[in-house]
Amino acid sequence: MPIRRRRSWELPESAVTPEATYLSRRNLLGAGVGLLGVAGLSAALSPFADAAPAVGDPANDPTKDLYPAKKNPAFTAGDRPITPEEISGNYNNFYEFGSERSAYQIADVAARMPRRPWTVKIDGLVEQPREVGIDDLIRAMSLEERIYRHRCVEAWSMTVPWTGFPVKDLVAYAKPLSGAKYVRFETFMNPEVALGQRRFIYPWPYIDGLSMAEANNDLAFLVTGIYGKPAPNQFGAPLRLAVPWKYGFKSVKSIVRISFVAERPVGLWEQVQGREYGFWANVNPEVPHARWSQATERDIGTGERRPTLIYNGYGEEVAGLYKGLAGEKLFM
Image 1 (cartoon, rainbow, N blue to C red):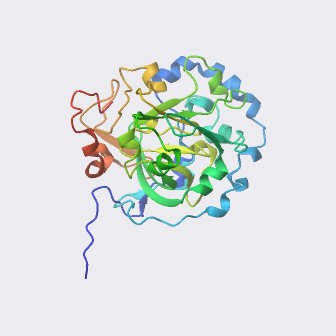
Image 2: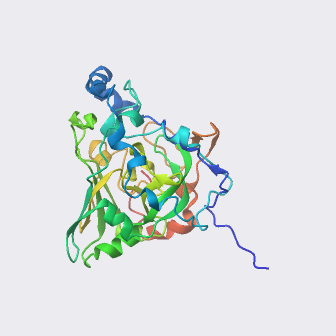
Image 3: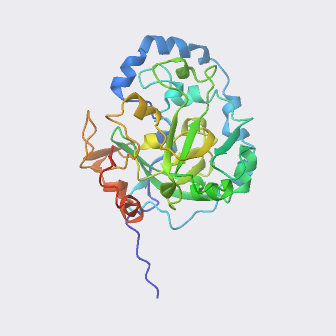
């Protein structure tokens, strides 16, 4: 009888963070939030108080027939329970729609953003730049479900079942030229709906990136759904990045542009506070954030505080990406 050795990052499905925990997540980063001004942002968001969320309802998603996708058994949750949907769906950092101190749930405000039409521009150092409709892009890929740990730089964590496709499949689709060293991801700009984008203290739109080696690692994932259905807006619909060995701010949401470039992208948080948020941002319990420890994390589904794992438990799969980079600031 063949014996299957569990990979270092595998968790049992019972450990996935319930969707409810993730769906109620609000923004933190206390210092940056304080700069926004609570009263001003709350007033700015007030027009959405009675707005209908139908335009952002995932039940109307044109690709809903593709869900639930087939589960990939190579990506499981080990001994961590999946975070309930009602928790994860209301626990979101999405500064385009407000801060943790706003009077409105991020999930409620994000639901006002139209999901269609939506196009993704693929450009830079590629054989042929193009702009593709999100539905055409999703249907051109083979969707699967993977259970991933998610670790926020703010020291909370969850475990969720993402649906999507590997970034390396997008790389193959884009056909980058040999001069491409990095992949730059850019989020939407729509200050009429995303009123947080009217706060000019942030250099919108949100951008961040990966090295080509990271983008081609099997763990790097482009997400279109969660909990067996199209992702609600607060999760970064209709297309977001998930790189589970890195802090969550690297996982760009609601992507509209993917560029293959020769120079390393400087992400939004790196522009705002480069001393605290660097390009690599790999999870490491021994390297504290400038304002708090990273030694432990709080699971938003169970409330349990547990030790943080190097590379968020995915070291066996990704540590080799950083050989020869000892001089880089790899962990923050």
